[in-house]
Length: 149
Length: 309
Image (tube, rainbow over all chains, first blue to last red):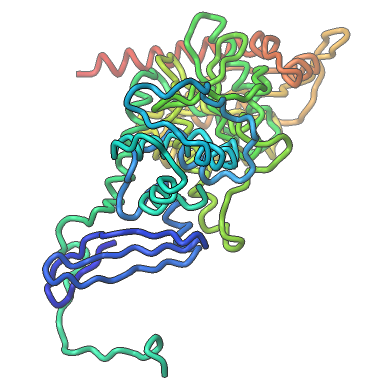
């Protein structure tokens, strides 16, 4: 899939992605020459088709997690499928979670919680964010397209 | 007419470059992402000497019992063996090996497989699914048939590529009935060594399994051997043998494929009862000759391949 700016005859570049939370997706592409932007809007079925492949429009923003597709897509997972990471202090260089963020994380189904925790931690570590707050979680969710996480 | 529905008129006739004429990709690089998935599988399986699928064309022929028995027999013989249960909708292999506890440990790049009492490394959707729950996906509430196969293929890919299989002599893949998933597996594992075909003696089984054999042939996947399961009945009390099914499916498949008959295994209620209870030791005893024949065949094939200039 490519988007071409007909006026400039230049391939448009991916700019941003949004997941409103209703199963739809918006991906913005911009012409590097004239700056015109277009938004590709997909319905839930089209969004699902792409996500079923385990790929992300706009490219991967964090490293692929083990069983990422299975954990994010399986609806009938057992609660004790994955062992929770022991609650040890964060190693040096890793962000810590404030109480509200930890509480919100606790509401994520356990089947996928460990993976979600790791994605947020990677996001914060890459940006040298020391404390993960609910605001940081919202920011990461928007930027990474973590619908439902 | 609103702005949203007005049909724009072309400003002027122009030729728009085709997909192939536009060099490069945007940041999405979807082909690159798919390629990376394949590379992840290849890297994981680089330490696995042989990947072999266990197939039948039909359910109920005892394919998972044969898989569990062969895997356990080889592990007992000192080989490093993994068993991937690719029957995602009807997983049974893990329980046959006595692996029931969940709590899979997730590392930074991989998921640790469970180990059976005999040391077989196991991954199965049974370890992920809620008790008694079917395989169900988070998805829009309609038209699921469009992508469910893709999701299942993705799950199989992750079982291959994300599990810490380690160094294995053999990774057995217990396939679901039918031949559809064999294409998927072959696409994910270019070095797939071949298939073991499981049948029962009946004509109906022959016909169904024959289709799986033809699917393997169409994909240039070698037939490594045939196991005829339920070849007669062994009395649990007096241990005498008696007929169970009419037919000679095993012999016919051997004749037609040129593959060896790895074993002819009678139905033994004691073996079935023990695997149902999570003890594959009796199945391992019953399948030990088949396991050794398979291992020797793989070693011969490997030697031949290495001897080629």
